[in-house]
Image (cartoon, rainbow, N blue to C red):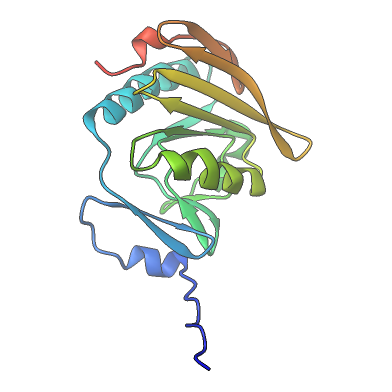
Length: 185
């Protein structure tokens, strides 16, 4: 009887040994996830949202907004790269030179055709497991925004908007975001 191959569990040390080839590498519960570089619509959406969030966070001296690529070390076997993340001033000690060590206060995943399933299901469950307090998911192709907040160990949807609507969501409930300024060019 043939035995099943032993599962190789990758760690952060394995991740840093991978050469830079424009792919995005993450380790989710010990398994390597590889995706191609994001498309231009994804990048434009990310840049536009970063501009809005970072300006707001700076004006109100709330903390730090970072954009990918930036490793988030959730555990030795779970290291991800959300498209955007926020760490509050109260938790700034988790910002290390090489990575964010622990759960940020807030993450954003911007869907691409190649990452949609992982972002909607796998990474959302991972963020839940490691208690990321706020998770936003944007779909530039469908022009859809959804925000979740951690509530008693589960994510509760707190906002949803489409196309050219405006939206506000934790952790920045006073920030009104016109989605027309976020999508693409």
